[in-house]
Length: 479
Ligand code: BES
Ligand code: MN
Ligand code: ZN
Image 1 (cartoon, rainbow, N blue to C red):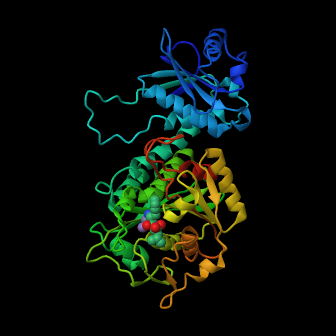
Image 2 (cartoon, protein in one colour; image 1 turned 135 degrees about the vertical axis):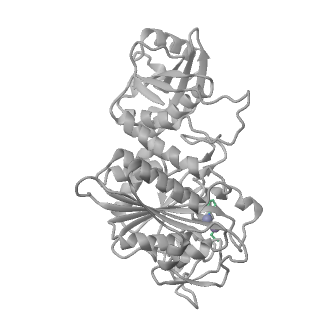
Image 3 (cartoon, rainbow, N blue to C red; image 1 turned 120 degrees about the vertical axis):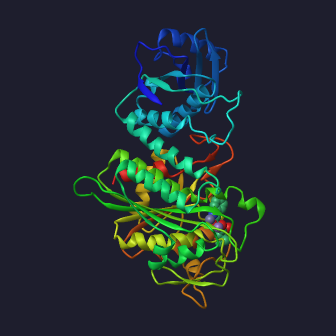
């Protein structure tokens, strides 16, 4: 996608205008011709600026698209971002190639150029690489955007979007095409392209490194597990050292505690945390902030078989803690446990993990808001601020529940891997906490549910959303 400042010398086939309800009552900011057309549309009551309303008006030359932003007091950059994506997506799926975008009446919203860049980068993505491209196939056609607000931040916004799209491309791939070794190949390729360091532990190395929890989860699959470590180092002294850890279960069948049919569908998406790490590392390599970033992808396929780990097994994790397995479907916390230990050994200032961890989190918060757990209020505040800037809603959940912590004790080992079904997201977070070294600020994002959508909404296309990539990038850019 090319985004340029609006000027003369090009001929657009589409015109996109975003209007708040109040803008519909005062058209003076718009030029004569446009104000004329808009006032006709508004007087015919076709359009009142209601949020999410979209009007498409064919004109002599090209097509006018108007998207409503709703009431002024509720309008924000997040609302504008979603409206831009909605409008641009509609243009690109209706054969529009070149769009003029009118947003200068919204210049009071600081960061408009950045959001325009994000919208330009996000609007065209859909997962269609497996569709046979027959004669009815209409590819997304929009390639050029000309905007009447244009600043330097457009390019940073596009990089945020590209990072999220890059994560989605892998997250959407089915289990038959992506296994842990594929994840490692993708990380290696990214590292080569951008000059990042990349260290990959295969099953032999994992066993030499005593990664008992990750190995147990991977033991039922013919596709062996991998721990992938990507490193970005800034020029000069880093402002901070941050580790990002992503759950990379390339398919979660549940293992011997096999999932019932409906629950197994979409479990190709159980690698989204790791895909997000891949996307974040790409974004960081392009944006080059002053912070040192370590990306860990902890990858395994959770399958039932004669070699699978079993309920009742007792395993020893990297940090020496023993874990009694009472449910092989609570595998995410196991692969994360070992990765959090390795990340802790680097003594970073901050660890953030992202994981499609619990169905309980989806029950608690729904499919449009992720759970945030943090052992530090300052860190939680920063991540919440990033999430609200990026329009990826989070809700802070408790980490101080002593009753649930008590239920983690096993009669035969140090811990059991799953507990009562009530408070399941909290249990999982408390379990992870056992593997984060003391003194490290840590946040855990439970992105189960938000990782995948059956129909498009907001800036997300059908399928993997890669929710969390932009929030994390925003956080890292401000470290
Ligand atoms: N990957 C699932 C969680 C999940 C559920 C992700 C729905 C996305 C959408 C995870 O590994 C899992 O199976 N969790 C179990 C834990 C339970 C056995 C303690 C769950 O939530 O049911
Ligand atoms: Mn599971
Ligand atoms: Zn899982």
